[in-house]
Image (tube, rainbow, N blue to C red; front, top):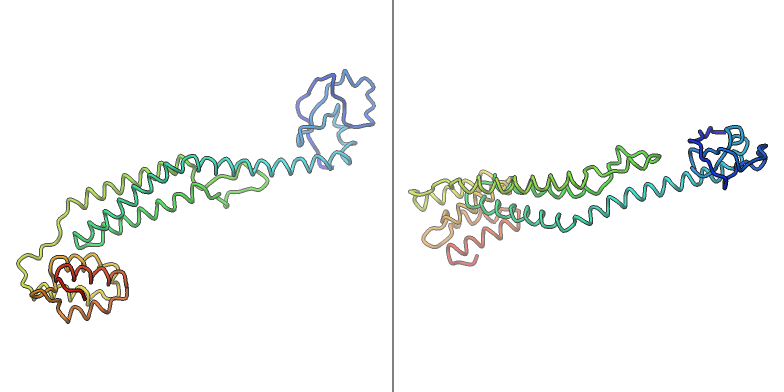
Length: 262
């Protein structure tokens, strides 16, 4: 028999020792103790408990396992319910962070540098990961025999604290990059502007996603537009861009600047 330690005494004239063959005749005066596992069976001594184990273990083990399942479900449901209660708060924070990401992308185009855009994308990705960590259990720490180990990788409170921090970080980046000025291309001739755009595309054709802000900036400022027409030489390079969305955006910029739909 696996030993079941008896808990502190429980006095009650309405209870009796669970072992049917208990030798104590005056059951009403007995001081009984609970089985430490199921907290239900009462015994007047460890001797009676051991002798009754062959019968009691059936219900004791089943009750113990059922209680574990209920405890595990309770912990998981409590965490999920808590997350749902804060769903609206999470939605508002994510909307704010997403707007900051869009603003940083526009600033990148205005500056002709990908730095602000990349910072915004990183913050938004961290915010998305934050939600899953607030809900998903940390399986590396889970002990199925102990329901208390069922906890998310990050508490609800920690999650919202991090989201607030990411929101503030994004807003600070907007302030920082808004103060910067784009590189000056004033004083360049039309041909020099064309050469600058051509070189930017030609030198970075394999990593066009990184320099897209620079290309859009140069086109927005007239680079490659000679007397209202887009240089055929630069146009050919633009056609080599594999990113369809970027190519479409560049062509829209060209149309706006030159009045031509390519």
